[in-house]
Amino acid sequence: MTSTTLDADAFLRALFDAALAAADPARCLAPFLPKPPKGRTVVVGGGKAAATMARAVEQAWPQDAPLSGLVVTRYGHAVPCQRIEVVEASHPVPDEPGMRGAAHMLELVQGLTPDDLVLCLVSGGGSALLALPAEGLTLADKQAVNQALLRSGANIAEMNCVRKHLSGIKGGRLALAAAPAPVVALLISDVPGDDPAVIASGPTVPDPTSFADARAVLAKYGIKPPPAVVAHLAAEKGETAKPGDPRLADVRNIMVAAPQMALEAAAQRARDFGVTPLILGDALEGEAREVAIVMAGISRQVRRHGQPLNPPCVLLSGGETTVTVRGNGRGGRNAEFLLGLAVALDGLAGVHALAADTDGIDGSEDNAGALLHPDSIARAAAAGVSAKAALANNDGYGFFQAADGLLMTGPTLTNVNDFRAVLVLP
Image 1 (cartoon, rainbow, N blue to C red):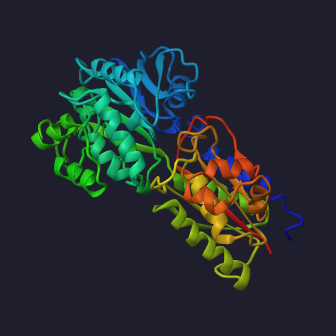
Image 2 (tube, helix red, strand yellow):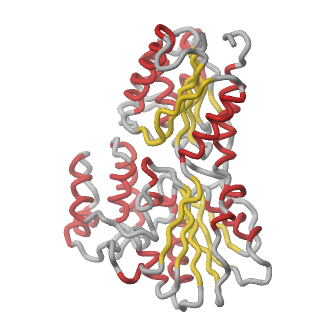
């Protein structure tokens, strides 16, 4: 195979589509459903895939078995459901509908018995979508802290540590409210390491972190929260559920889809094309532009020395990079990664790449990510956009818009974090 016999765009998009299919709730959720209980089944949950997960439950659940509940998903990510109410709310900065939905969930799970069942559907994005402030805090307090965290460069585990300690529903509190009813949580992972306690800030999972840990995160990134948040974190009242809490004895957290599954599906699709895949990891973290420098170095080694693989090959990775915002441009972490890769490769022949968020939304933009080619810098330059200047301004969106490389999918209705594929041709 040579660079003239493979359509790089079609190849990369086929791999992304395979990754999405592997994480489709319609395909992966039903095998993990428990049997209907003697009593009622109440469905609750939140995340970017929550509505499609709810629909998958409805399609697989016996028609004669009681089923009701409510899930919260991002605006534009709802799908029609018959027995489970779907509420749309804001992400990544929480809003009033998300707060009301979270409060209603706590009401729905209270007063149940051991004969009932709480089925909790959890996916990435749930931290912002289930925004129920702890006692003494307001939604505005949570919004201010959330916006500061998003701009700080904090990783997802750090952000969710803070969010749990400002919440009335996260950090296992939803499961505590449901006791003595058994709880089965079905999770789609969007976090490095697939830690259930981090996915959507773990509403059904015991939390090993503390108020002191939350204060340390804010101090690490120089974040000065509103006075009410300072007071709340200092008072240390209402700690999250902890491992060993007997009220969580009848709680099961089950992973139904994860980034590794998506990468393996993409790897198999690459083999179908006759291209050798190499999965570098499903949990890569770090500054997006710095991860890009490493990927560029590996790509050069493949081109120059045939190591660790001979071309044609594709380097696959997942995880969640971070972006420390220094400029005022547009773009999420995938556009930032690809722009950093473009600068590092500087037009190296034979290297093409796709990076996208599997939920179809890169940060808060309307693109899933972008596609990079050897001529992307030249294309953008012809439109008056400098790659280095765009990177300094965190303007990956503007760069790839000028280079005609934006990847638009719309909401994919699943979420297993970021997907990166770097194709190296002979």
